[in-house]
Length: 129
Image 1 (tube, rainbow, N blue to C red):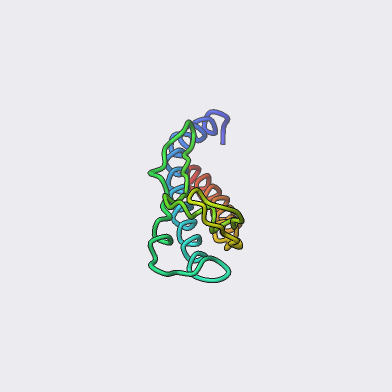
Image 2: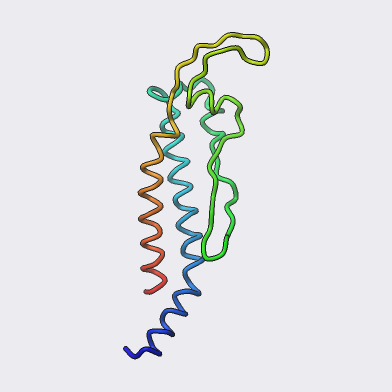
């Protein structure tokens, strides 16, 4: 391969890479949501009463950034932090709580991280493919 052919190949890969990265980030977000929801389905995570809290975990729409993409996974429910980290003290209504943590997001992080690394490796492979 000549230097010019290699440069052409790099340019073509650079054009394809952002779309591949966005696809990988989107896939990782869905894996993360699934893992968090599974972890929020009983001990050691929080118990399920109605399923509304578990189903509240969603990714944002995601957005592209220069040469990549980003996505945030979260819940709109106010009990999210309290369930993950626990809470001891009085709430804004004066009720006392001594609630232990029921981690469900933290245990999902290693899976999300491994999935993202794998997806980025595939993105580069596909871009050069």
